[in-house]
Image (cartoon, rainbow, N blue to C red; front, side, top):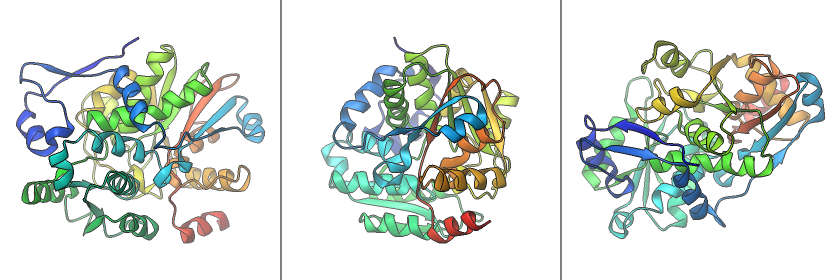
Length: 351
């Protein structure tokens, strides 16, 4: 079964050609780009033997608490510490030899940075990553540790995508965006593909939303394999751009916000990811920082899983009752990452 999402690129054709080059399949202005379930299957073949097949774990205590069977897909145990490695490797591995020699550039608060840096290292591709000055030190150190050049910016005063585009043009680099790219979306969708191979009869899937790349790929995979599945996104209360966008029926930009879930702070959903969310999402749940902190504590102390606040947001929504119609159901939850600063983790555990 194919799940197709079509969106017009005629307004953005020139910009996509300049930025993405060989990484994105281009079409004429009057045609459509189609993301298919087959693209996710192809991404899974590229990632086989490279990405970790992350485990699915359960908790009897949580099942009793929410009166459901919950299955956690542990992307906190993925290479680079997060699901982002999937999309980054799927994208960079499809670049031409010439583009690989010139290198790639990306922008990220941390997990995508590490995913791109690691994928580039494995593929012998130079990488430049634009990161905010206030990114967690553990993520900055890991990105540099994989051999990438880090360019710092002020997330309040500067636009990271503009910096990355300038570097791409000046140095001839291919841009590997954090979420708004077909190859990124297909790569991220392999997380749900694996989860449903292990637990094929899920009733619902709960996924965190930053820019929407993970939930877009996962929802396409989920509805290809199980069309009636409920797909629910989760955002921080203070960073609810996708929630507002779905309510309004068009992309909404919000001011730069703050949350302990630093990976969920884009100010607007993507041009590509938003139509996918419109098509596939049942709803978006909003969670507070305290609810996220409680989920981080539960996952660490009861399940022995180190999960960063962004990755724990779906568990927070479930634990706090923000997700409706849970009792008696089988629920899949994507724990998207585990790259948390040790001092922040200690502070959350001691709250």
